[in-house]
Image (cartoon, rainbow, N blue to C red):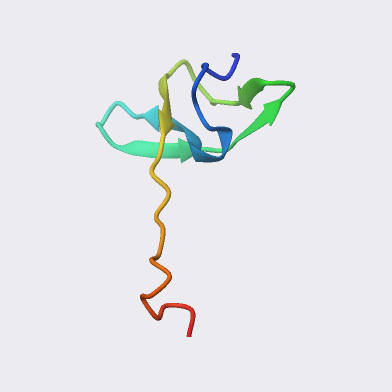
Length: 63
C-alpha cells in the first residue's frame, strides 16, 4: 500500500486491532514509497501517525 500523502514516514506505525480490543504494533518497512507489513491472519489493521516526543533544550535531560 502506498504511504498516504502528507504522512511523515518516521512517524508512521501499523497497528493490529485484535478481536479482544487490544492493539499491537506491527513491524513494517517502507519500500519504494510503499508500506510493507505482514499479518498472520485476516485482521483489522490501521495506519497511524504517532507524535514524536521532544525534550526542551533547557530541561536538563541530556545532563
